[in-house]
Length: 387
Image (cartoon, rainbow, N blue to C red; front, side, top):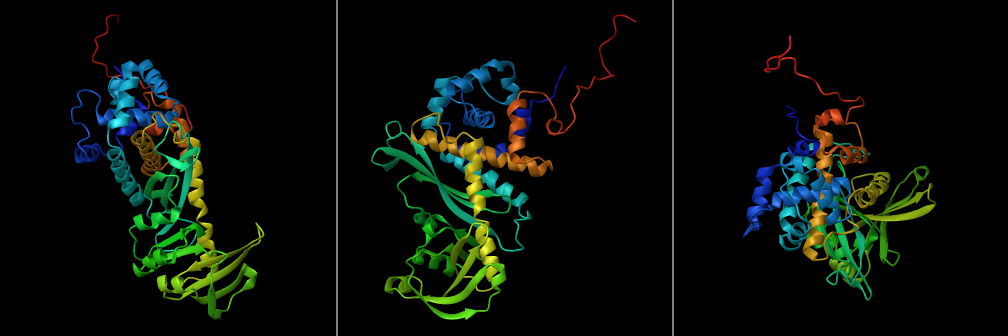
């Protein structure tokens, strides 16, 4: 008798089930639920993310084909309408909180990960990505007159490229408002584009003993107090200490700022950075801003390899549930990669999982380069009928 778990069942062993139950209890997620539990909903949606299912009917068909293995995978009998209703009515915050549990675990695992620059402080990149929606089908996702959208605002921990904060809003909310949602970590460095330049909010970061690196807007009014010597062969053209001139700008940010102008020889661009960090070198400030590109790569990765551009339901709750479970699936892949010391990239791991979820193979063996052969047990209790 083959007692090996399926790949999917082995994946669920990495999920803290007790923490999931706490998230469900926090929002009374299973009130009046008789058969299809929140855990089954999560597993079905995670399966859809890992295998890139196109629709609810696609999920139902694939799972029903493997009906004999569903019990061992931890999934109860699934019907399309049941899953659609669960996505519509069950509080999306259950899955958001559970994703945060996985994020906390992943951040601990990747705390010592190299980020390309020699820096002891925690480094965050802040940005947003817009997901276009049909306004007729998603009337709550207001964006423009004839177009709907949601924004995925993400604060990415560059140690392992793990999203430490995600806020899902409609497309009309300006990016700078997300700075109000961030709990500033003392000593951490926050890298952001010039869309987040709001001197009152930047001063809040400064007062909380955090640091920021951002690009300056073209219409920024300032005066130079003094200049630091620079080595122009490195691309740094000037390193200045400045004060803001505008009445409201000076009122909102009364302290001095550091202005660094850098020439990017590869892209032939002149970039101007503003920061409140006066200790790091000017070249390091430019290198830190270059790390902001990792958040763009994160958005590109999850949009290409997870199901967050097309949705299984039209309600706001269904959309947020799907996005948060997609984030949980992404973080789960990172946890597996680190705990099992896998050398493959997250993309390769996801591709392997996509075609092996129903196989009964040791998980580590599935990622090895050699083929797996079932081992026969020589110590069988069954008596031989023919000698």
